[in-house]
Amino acid sequence: MTKVRVGLLFGGCSGEHEVSISSARAIAQALSLGENSSKYELQPFYIQKDGQWQAGNLAQQVLSSGQALQLSEEASAAPLAILTQATALTQTDPDPETSGTLDSGKIDVWFPILHGPNGEDGTVQGLLKLLQVPFVGSGVLGAAVGMDKIAMKMLFAQGGLPQVRYVAVNRSQIYSNPCIFPKLCDDIEAKLGYPCFVKPANLGSSVGISKVRTRQELEAALDSAASYDRRIIVEAGVTAREVECAVLGNETPKASVVGEITFTSDFYDYETKYTEGLAGLEIPAKLPPEVTTKIQEMAIAAFQVLDCAGLARVDFFYVESTGEVLINEINTMPGFTATSMYPQLWAATGIPFAELVDRLVQLALERHS
Image (tube, rainbow, N blue to C red):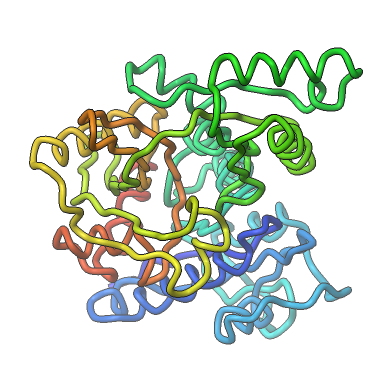
C-alpha cells in the first residue's frame, strides 16, 4: 500500500513558536505509532522565527531536538518555492541533507500545526488553498475570523450565541489627541464597568491581556494592548467557571466531553497557562447534564457559524449562580501536545491521540476531494 505523505508545517513567526514545535513533535510521534506507521510518511517543514522556511535536514533537526534554530543566515528557499516543489509530481534533488531540499515524492496532505498570527490566521491557509492542496484544519475564513476576536464576536452575535458585553477599540483611538482618549475610557466604563479585561484582538496564549479595576489600570492596559495589535477588545468581567469543548469534523462535526480549567491566580494569564502547577484540567467537568449538553451544542454552532473544518477548541464561561453559558472564543488550531486540552478531551471521549491525528488527516483529504 502506498503511504500518504504528510507535510508537517511548524514553527512560525508568532510568540507561540515553541508551542508549535512541541505540537509538531507529538503529531510526528503519533504518525509513527501502530497502524499510522504503515499509512503515513512524514516530511517536516520548519518556519524559523524570522520567517525563513527550512526543509530537509534542518527541519528534521528541529523536530528531533525540540529546539528552535537560532536566527542565522542559513540558506533558505522562498516559501512558495518550497511548497511548489513539495507539491510537484516528482522530486529529483539527489541531496536531501541540503537545507531547503526534499526527499523524492510529493506531499499528499499538509498539517500546518502553527499557532497564532502568521500561522492559524488564514495566511498560510490561503497559501495552501492557492496551491489547491489538502490541509488539516479550517480554511481562510474560519482561520482568519477565529484569530480576530472582534470579528469572531460579531459572528457569534449574528449566530445568536450569548457572550459577555464588550467594546471594540482601534489603536488610533488610544494614540489619539488628549480629548478623544478620555472619552474612550469614559465609554468603556459606562458600558462595561470594572473589573474588565483588555486584550489584543489577534494574539493567542493570553499574550498582552490585562485585568483592570481602575481608570489608571484601564489606561495603562489599553496602551499595552495597542503595542501588540492595532485592534483591541475590552470585555466585561464575569464571575464564572472556565470550561472548554473540542470539536472534530467537517460538515457534520461532533463535540467532545467538556473539560474545566482550574487555577488559583487572579485570571488565566500567560504565566498561569504555561507555568507547571499553576493550572489544572478537570476532564470531564463536573457540570449538570443539561449544562454539558448546552455547551456541546453551542460549540458545534460556533464551529459552523465560522465555517470551521477539521478541529477547533471552543471556550466558555459557565456562570453557576445563574446557569448561564457564555461563549468566550474559538481556537481553530489549539495546542496539540499529549497534555494539551484538545487531545485530552478527545481521549476522554474515546479517541486516543494517534487515532485523533489519523482522523484529522483523513478529514483534510475528505474535504479536499
